[in-house]
Image 1 (cartoon, rainbow, N blue to C red):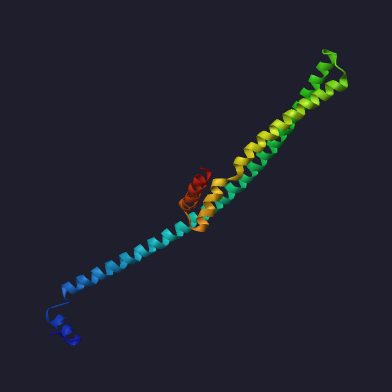
Image 2 (cartoon, helix red, strand yellow; image 1 turned 60 degrees about the vertical axis):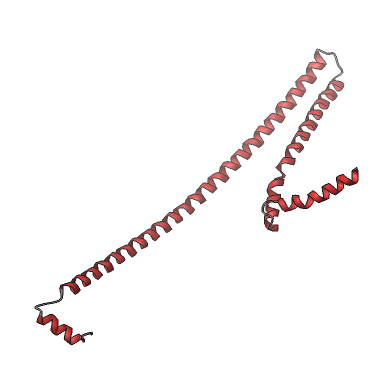
Length: 176
């Protein structure tokens, strides 16, 4: 049976003081409550630290992005300058060849100039063809196909290949 509150108090005073087990239980509860408060405070400090780290990381990312853009602009400017220097060198080399043909080869200056311009034009066409071949690879065809497959829901791209396989077999049979 359970005792009422006044009976517990009477029993505590009759036994000569508070019950040691309830005193220990209260102290244990207080220690547990204090420990939980300390852990909550630690979690709060950890959250503040995490927020500070995140804020500092964003600031660092912004600074590095500005540095990257400044460096990229400098590299582009230097590449343009190198391109102009190379073009100038080609012009002077062409002029030197023309002068050499006129002086040592005994060619007419107009004919030597025409030959020099023809060599430079052929070189420019070859470089243009080389650039076109390289530019074809810059289309990111596989990346675009991967993104398209992702948005279609075809992650691996196997469905597209599987759909083409029967068509290819049909084409092969038609050719026979």
